[in-house]
Image 1 (cartoon, helix red, strand yellow):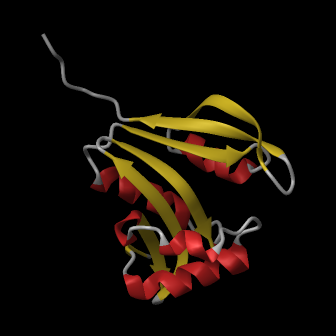
Image 2: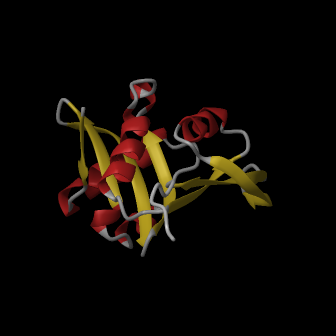
Length: 146
């Protein structure tokens, strides 16, 4: 499996993956407003099977969306996307995300990578109305200051 940054030529494939495999798909115009460096892809046999959309501000990041092709789930694509992003951006000290309360597989994935629940947003999601769990990951600083 190959993990890489998306290019402009990948955008239509990312939108199709979103439309076909996201139970709550983003509108197409959301993808056209993104900086392409914020989209990371997982490829298998030259096919995009997963993607993650990130926003980076200084030493913090927010995971906006991570999605894996329905038939490729349980192949560690989402896990690899998280790991590669964290390893690539060593300056990132904190990552935050929101996830549907009912999305147990995603919550378990995030917990596996060290995310913890820090808050909830009541009735955040629509169709159906559902709470959002806010999760956070922090890089542990192993340096000692005097």
